Image (cartoon, rainbow, N blue to C red):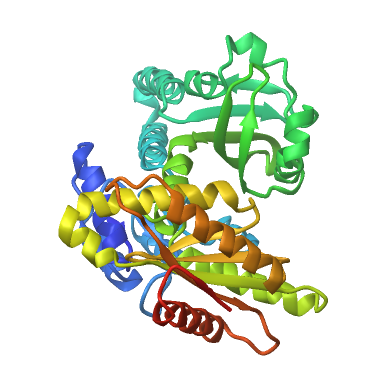
Length: 423
């Protein structure tokens, strides 16, 4: 049974579990979960969201269910606060998984919980069946160890001194380690790169303070492998004391790469590969804030529009028009500084930001760019020109007012015969 008040999250998890051989039923409130579990003992496991709609949260629902039936419960939550974990200690659950974790790590936790619950049930057999129960227990233990060894996420266990006592094959692959023995030479509390990244401090809190934690870092392993990893640290409790820790290692390099690519796509014009309007406005806001803090500095922005661009598209086609825009972009990028910002404003209009630049300095650069554009080798074998509008920041300017002034200056350049700069 999946208990989650987010239908979208529930559907994603349900579809994934069905794909991996599980039958699921979803409810959205703690009250419904209690009623279903206590009247239908056919469920093998409950995935329980902590924060739920209604008056009963997941922890309260779990307490009532466990009074009624013995069933493994795994909690789901996006909240990893200390209060949550302290509350969970009073509920005999079979695991806690943060939302957003790799789904195969969740699958591994489910399978482990089912295995542990099966073991717990078998140990309650009467003495006359003790030998048979023991054999089944040993078989299940070996299966559990095999499951851990072959889990789709890296698993590392260390003692209270930071010495690695177990590491599975996936962890070796993620770190690029040649062997278990080589990896065990690393002490997780004292190894300098882990100390520098803050992981060792988090692990120390886990072991000494019984605190779970999550750490994400770009890591270069001892064997030179560069990887972005997310580490989930959990204390291992023995005799009511934390004497060891388990670390689950997720390789999130590909995910981070895709996120960065998506971020770039959201800020970049796909035709010219320069920044888009959204990014330019963000940079302009940042520059205004900087100048307002440092009143001794100023900056300029300039808008430019390719003259008679519609005629180019009409006579030579849009493909040729695109080539003109790409060529013009290339000329501008070669001349401006790294600190300057060039963006495509829309169509054949472009906009530039010049930090720490006076109007006279920017005007010289605009004249230089205007001449370079008029002299460039055009893909259509015709002269290409552009009209420029340049403005300097004044106290009290807003993003909209400054852009509007630059736009007005650009249209003044158009009215003055094009191929000129107006300030």
